[in-house]
Length: 267
Image (tube, rainbow, N blue to C red; front, side, top):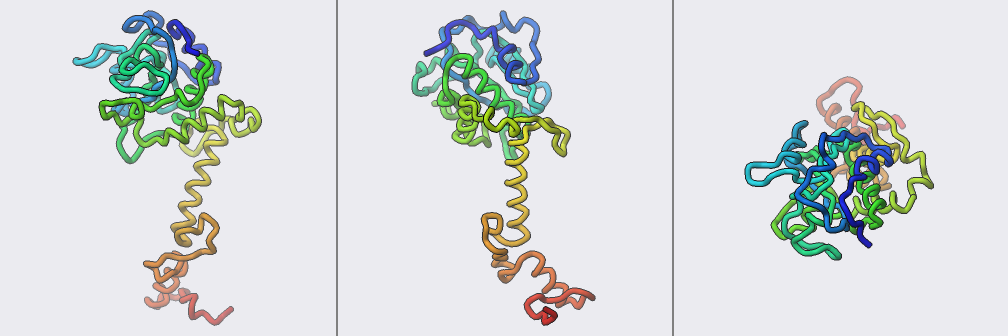
């Protein structure tokens, strides 16, 4: 199954998924001709990471006229709708069910604002919007998450985008949205404001809490503590936890109140 015609519904579909949208003047008429049919979504990063990355996507480069994709995803989770017609974003490559070297005429391109270099600058709200946007588009064209593809997966020209993103995990989350699992646990999809003032879902926040609390516990108590080990300590600290090592160091330096827990007989 493939959607035929240009996606003049882009803004409505994204807004229907609860995503913020900016419609650029003339987007419905912008493009390098009409789609043949639409078979999926191709995911990119801009490679710039700044607030004006959209200008290149809309207007092009000296070597390549714009538009270079249909959508730009900002770091705050806002979608810019650039074009309803074909964009020059895919290049040469292949993916099962897509015409080889001709994905421009069959895929919606999303250029997400990112440097594309470590340390990765993806924001939680942006990643959440990336998945929700892909799910909404795929639902509209009647396709599954298997047709949500990274440029690097499709490309035969050595592309790396979107860098720093596990696409298998990304597709699992997109498919879960398509399957309506978010509706079964609706509270996970509720939006809240995080420490940085960004709007994120409860599920995204819980994921980051679990990850970073686990990393913190590992640093304090030794590798494996976050996975159920009973404070194993670090081998380079003599199999001590951070707190135990501080006690030993303080006792050796005769700092008042510090004790070596291994020789403490006050139990």
